[in-house]
Image 1 (cartoon, helix red, strand yellow):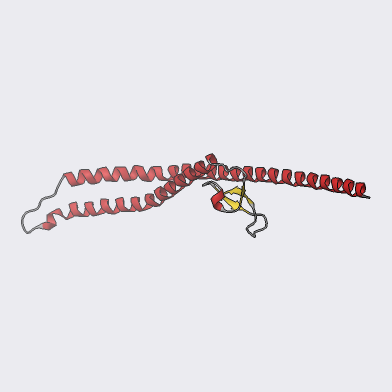
Image 2: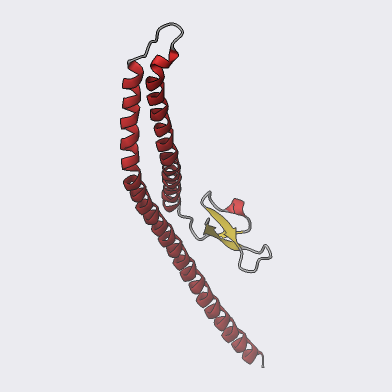
Length: 171
């Protein structure tokens, strides 16, 4: 009878070990697949950001050219100061009107260009962050808290109860 129990115990232990190996293999594969999906998503976002940056450059180029042109016109205008006889400022009314027109046009161009520059800068910063994250790939190591993982990952538990988990890439 004892030999039968040992045999059953060994068979059960073998089945248990086989099951654990299968589960571990599935976990490693799913973590690897998840890591690849994460990388692919970041690469896709970076490419989309690059396309938007190209569109911003295309959209902003004529505005920037106009802004450079009006800035040069303002410099030329301001280099040729208008002087008027004492008590007759109306003699420079056309000069002042032209200055106001140029300054208003310059401000309008700046207000059109600034949101594009801000968006371009935001996309550039995001792409730099994506590059940093792609270079800082966490290894799927066991963890109990985020402090067990590196700066590019957080501890993800499968049961949500704080049991041991696996370091996963940050979103």
